[in-house]
Image (cartoon, rainbow, N blue to C red; front, top):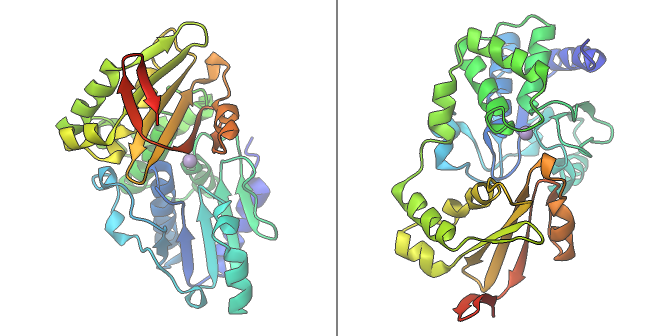
Length: 323
Ligand SMILES: [Mn+2]
């Protein structure tokens, strides 16, 4: 049984009354964020003959170029040019980016819609389609389309599957429900390709990235008592490999796949005398890494968190220290 039926009907009615939608998603957009904005823009075009503007504060990563027309994304907008704002995959942006103040200041009556699967992401006085049991925002969008029997062409199917596949870690995380797989199988039937996503998301590492990973993995250690797997990446490593900060992502996840590890911690230097810590765990390991991150004034969620500390990484005879 579809639990968002009432909200879907309300959304349908709301979309019939708008003319100039602004679609908003979060900074450092991931495949679910992009999948949601681009599929929603397609729905607005195909079903309602509306042209939408897509806004996210920064440029999405180049790795998404093969999967989404990211050149269509704009990093700026004028609120008075829109009669509606649709938040996708991060309702909390409404507050983080003070949309409430912007809307009030504009004096316009702007319809606010929020489609999200994150906890605590409801927007007051908005039309909220939130479901934390959904594996991805793309999954909720599929359900909306499916409820109204909208046509899902191969392009749309690919956008939606990109989001679902990425947010479930390629159907490996336990947010992969029977419904997630049913939806994904229907999207495959409608023309989406898993190989395309895999190539786009996972099999596109550069040699520089892999060289950096090799250094980090060489240094990896595991504490048998706590089950913490750690490693370190210095500015010098980045330079030596011709790698960028973005290439450090992924090391935590690999370390977390060591069978004895309960969680992973990767420290990487940033230019301005800062060290970024990234923590990962997995549901079955029973560790809440956000608790560790919060002790260092960081944040994130149970399975993926981070924090920053001041200093530089130095190697001495006893191992790595922070100076
Ligand atoms: Mn998501």
